[in-house]
Image 1 (cartoon, helix red, strand yellow):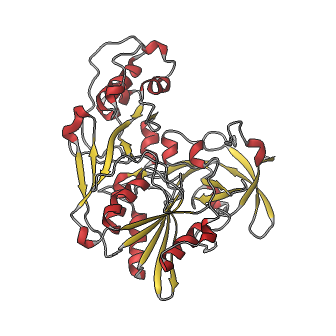
Image 2: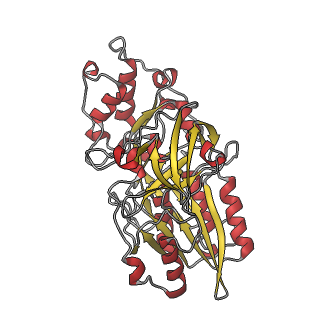
Image 3: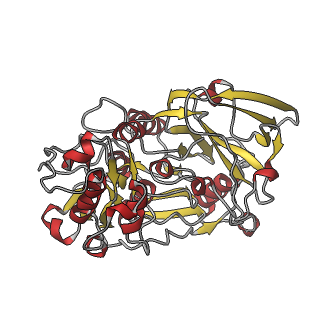
Length: 439
């Protein structure tokens, strides 16, 4: 088997070569897929020693029930099933839906947090900072659940489904828009700009998800390359990377970003290692930095939240041993483990279009930092303020980051704005959709 290309959370199909194997063991008619799931988990699951020695497939109504019944629940919040097409599309940004996200303020007002430019919402002109006051004619409070979360009942992410949204715009006017879900290509870069403060050039980069550009070999992002070349051309001396709504994606893209950000003096040094289960230890791998471009930083500032997960945490962990890394906002999600899809190794899964994506490996940085299931704590806790647009210095977390760059600290006035959201958008999604949460 050729060298595996990893995704922290997931890996793009086609990044290694291995022929699917037939399932030679007969099983109960109608239960072949469940047996294929069980066999694949027994072979590849990171915690495979916690998987039962055998199961009665007839006791599980669905494939999802079976998977949920055998995962290692003390730590596994991540393993899931999907289809091969959905998996492949997600990692190159082929989406369907309205194409927006949301975030709450401290007083639980709901705002558009991001919009994909080519999505139906983007084409309708939606912007971060628009307050959502009603959905389908009902006030937001009516969608609150008994557990304190929200269910906005927007339907499946299928083209043709429409929903109505009433917004209060920053100028105080209101507008109601009916938006129809459609297929679209999502963008990862939400904002890039340079602040010139006191003769110092400070880059700001709002990056929403680690998606590869379809058709590029080796796997990488053209958007990332364009952004990094922009910051190089501007001669930025510090960089603020906004990952507050970035739940992960392709590790190949995470490696690409890490290679742009690492100093030339550390090129060739260890970036991270992967560890599989004991029976697959011969396939453990490591990845070294290979410097790309001319950016040279002694420190990096990341804006984070509990929505910052997976590949976002990988980049942070990769770079921490080699420079000062400062987190502003909130504690990250906590996902030091990752996955790759298993249908390529099992003919039954492949032929039935079932993609099993369980946790298959754990990562560690060059200092051995690996166990961060509780996430990385923020150095400076600051509340979110989605009522302000991307790159607006009134945005509390951006203001705090700029303040740190200029003064080496964050004022108590800004720190006092911190609040822990009772519910965040990442909570509304599971499985593949949690890697790329969007409505």
